[in-house]
Image (tube, rainbow, N blue to C red; front, side, top):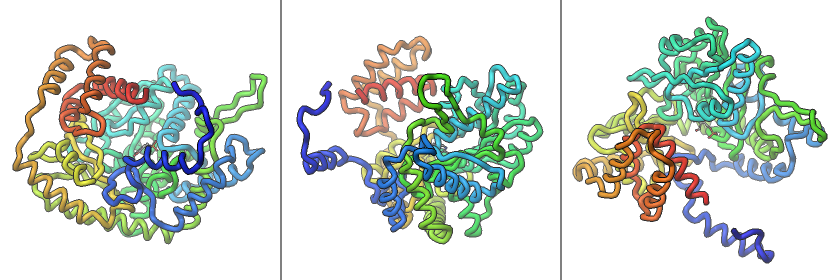
Length: 479
Ligand SMILES: Cc1ncc(COP(=O)(O)O)c(C=O)c1O
């Protein structure tokens, strides 16, 4: 281990090294990015970056020391609440991202349930819910009841959720829309269920919450998903997605302060200062908050509507183009700028690799329940004008792969598959799994290389075993 650098290094050298280290990073101006990059190339983004820097040393932990953080947070929360049709009662907090917003909403629901005598709280999730809910359940000790989604629409199956409700239920969840397929759960029906059983309903609008009301304003028909729906008790909405702000920007909203109160942690029974944390982080930079505030005001409704129109045009071009390509099919009925495609004639993991060779960065997705393996597509400000090129590339890759037929499975992967499927997952110890991962890393079979064989293998494994392998992989590469 290196310890602190032995000498002080020159600024120019450090910047040069950083440039080198980040050489292979996804470029935020790359029109072939179909994931992660939500930045709009606009003056507002530059302003956001400047403000981020200006406020990065301000600690939003302490409103007495940095009262500006409270002012900015209240204003950003009010913008989010108004955007999602909340009334004056709606309250919330600025958080570091969708995952934190979700964990907080789950904590609030769990503690509400505890007060009502629930001893072993459960959360009912459509299978399409974001993994952040499972993470929250692990951290907060809730049991997850995962309910398969409708086989065709891939949206929450309300009767199945109703059937899963019992005396231990602390929370039900819907997505607006789901990340994997971009489909909108029937929030109104979930709201009715929540009211009938006196349960909180959290709507995960992390990815859709910002853009859906804008699409509605542009004339799209969007089923109500926000505080207009009776029974919706909390909503998560991320600004670092389609509002294009620097990373670390989300809001969790509550219809009523009584529920939000369960989210707040205060502790003064120690010899130090009285600690009050409304969110998970304690010390937290006010930078992303101030940057979000500045960008929201700078672009305002007209600026964001213009961006939304470009995104909508991109999405419509994408969906029309996909419908014309033989051999690919869009899953469900996506409502915003995300969708997933599958194929009955080519291997989607191989397709994602072929597209990657042409520079396109997209997420391959494993099969789950009735949803087949797919590729996730995201229309983003950076790629909305490049969709026709994407469609041409996709069509070419599909025909090349269809002509080539299924590639043979390499010996290494065939024997690996045999090892992994021969024994029940709980009989496999970490040691052999770790050796398998190490061999794959050493052989260059995973990481930057061709991922098709690995994805084929992983998609055939039970999810728990896959998760163990991914955990070991994450541990190995970070050492
Ligand atoms: C629907 C949905 N929920 C939650 C999250 C988690 O957000 P974050 O990555 O900001 O933690 C995402 C991220 O893509 C998402 O799409």
